[in-house]
Image 1 (tube, rainbow, N blue to C red):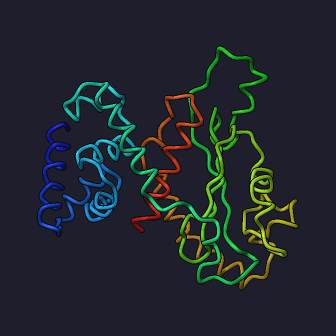
Image 2 (cartoon, helix red, strand yellow):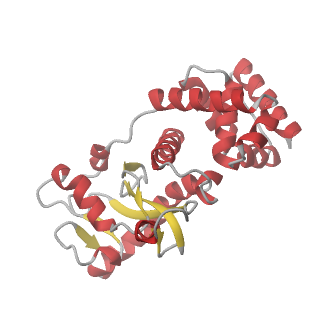
Length: 268
């Protein structure tokens, strides 16, 4: 595995020098399995930020594979402290250079208020701290996942699937409709409604539920939903969001998710 990773790093160095890239399907799958992006997409991100390409690959590998810091340092052939140091540095570079998530982009080439975009809640498993009282821990219980989780709401463009909204991090039991109303109510246009699933049906002033409209509209919604799910699905293929999150800081988790979403928006 270490050899594969170092080989991938060597490959992208050649990409940078040559300014172009051709890769066979088998290598492409191998690349994606390490970094979560295609080689061409990785090159786009590399050209955007000002940092050592190997350090970027360490960071992408951390997101995709989610190794322990010890194992990640072994992959990178550096000390644990050096590995962690450059994860933070690359995170800062990406946070500074990547285009922001723009809620106003929901109306880009889409001039409808109903729906203006599609909202979907998503939960990520986290370690449960059993040292604290259940009265507090229960706030993090996700009925979707059957365990402690962080909850986010993701809003996507109706046609392109671009992620135009990502909520703050909330405990897994938080109400999805209330999160959206609390964060976005003041930013909504008069008469605007978001498309959502049946969980939101009791909030008709803010949401329109797919099966609450005529069949033709529902069929159209279902057809575009696949594009939306592909975009969100790419985010969820990163190991750090698939496996149980080992940290307990919602701030760090949210930062990594925001960066990942912006990477996917940028390369798609």
